Length: 452
Ligand SMILES: *[C@@H]1O[C@H](CO)[C@@H](O)[C@H](O)[C@H]1NC(C)=O
Ligand SMILES: *[C@@H]1O[C@H](CO)[C@@H](O)[C@H](O)[C@H]1NC(C)=O
Ligand SMILES: *[C@@H]1O[C@H](CO)[C@@H](O)[C@H](O)[C@H]1NC(C)=O
Ligand SMILES: *[C@@H]1O[C@H](CO)[C@@H](O)[C@H](O)[C@H]1NC(C)=O
Ligand SMILES: *[C@@H]1O[C@H](CO)[C@@H](O)[C@H](O)[C@H]1NC(C)=O
Ligand SMILES: *[C@@H]1O[C@H](CO)[C@@H](O)[C@H](O)[C@H]1NC(C)=O
Ligand SMILES: *[C@@H]1O[C@H](CO)[C@@H](O)[C@H](O)[C@H]1NC(C)=O
Image (cartoon, rainbow, N blue to C red; front, side, top):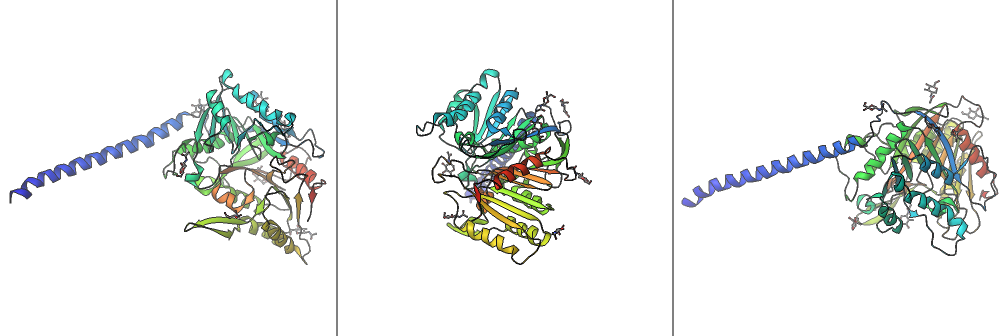
């Protein structure tokens, strides 16, 4: 009977030790959570959402390949490479970049050297940031990029996002934040093709720390995913969205009153209060009154979901249905400009035909679709590919990183920028909305846009 009596105190001792260890773990956890809050709280340079600047300037930036004959309005349009260089000229403290691709230096001898020159120039500018004391921070999902290694050797800091582990998708986000003041969002990424052979469109917003602060929170979110293989359930307040579809930032864009916010995808990447890309697009289409012009490389309302290890394809209705509603029930004129290229999914034509057939026998109903294609859409250089991803309506614009393919929104990371403006101000050709509409109409009326 001696056994149990000597074991009892031993047991309680074990319990004590276990409890103590548990307490320690808890304390470490709490310390970790608070330390991350603290670190991220420090990094906003004293500018807060209370005293940030919302008196901003915006410029449309485009890359129009030389061999596309599109009449370009010099006043409305800034070449993309000039936009990037202007941003780098302004940089004093930090440049934060997210790009799906890092391929600015093309070593492919088949390409003409002049075509690749702009990419090389931009890469040299990024390398030389160090000598000016400007910090370059990059979030990327690439594991073995020679260009990133070179940049790291020149003092860039790179954080790796393991998209395979997080969503099984890809990082498609493409944006810049300079000094938490100026931003770029658009279709172009850090690929020499974006500065030469591919047709790209984006915006640069200057002196706009309010918007930059919010986009920086998306960047911080990516930054914190560094080498994680899961999305934590508790996030620092420093990644909570500042603005969204219900409480957009009120700002001035070249002295025109507007409202704006940043959206993201996939849903898993939407931190607290962040509007999803698909919801942003939904809202912009829903509030259009007279017209909706959409320019995307691919349009496919399908989503691939993995179900018990196999991939199941489903109809993805959210954008498709709101377009149908706008056309049929509200009499909004819709134009859809899609690229015809080697990766065009065959079902695209079926969905587009279905959309067009909606207006049969209906008066006051207009839905038109054209395909943008240029020579040599079969090659990897993507000569003349219309890589644009935007929408403009009578009262808003949406500029994003994704094509309008269900699977993209479901698993790939991207960001979007929504700008709403009051359409009553009709002094033509002065707002970003009118500049985008002009760019769309130029492409739509060009010889490269054909209705099939
Ligand atoms: C903005 O406000 C914060 C605290 O609210 C302050 O620390 C910071 O200095 C202010 N920045 C400017 C530029 O006024
Ligand atoms: C990313 O995550 C996947 C799945 O968890 C893993 O197999 C892979 O090794 C990770 N990649 C890197 C570079 O850590
Ligand atoms: C941004 O603000 C600075 C200082 O107020 C000004 O010098 C500069 O011209 C502005 N940039 C743009 C593009 O408006
Ligand atoms: C547009 O006009 C409406 C009504 O006049 C006003 O309530 C709203 O704030 C305005 N929006 C912007 C972005 O100026
Ligand atoms: C879904 O996945 C299959 C097989 O991986 C692929 O062939 C198909 O194109 C994908 N569909 C979409 C909509 O991504
Ligand atoms: C088409 O419908 C819209 C919205 O209901 C209306 O404002 C417009 O006047 C209509 N146009 C024609 C030609 O009937
Ligand atoms: C706004 O101002 C900037 C800088 O002054 C200019 O480059 C841009 O073209 C203007 N944007 C619009 C939409 O007028």
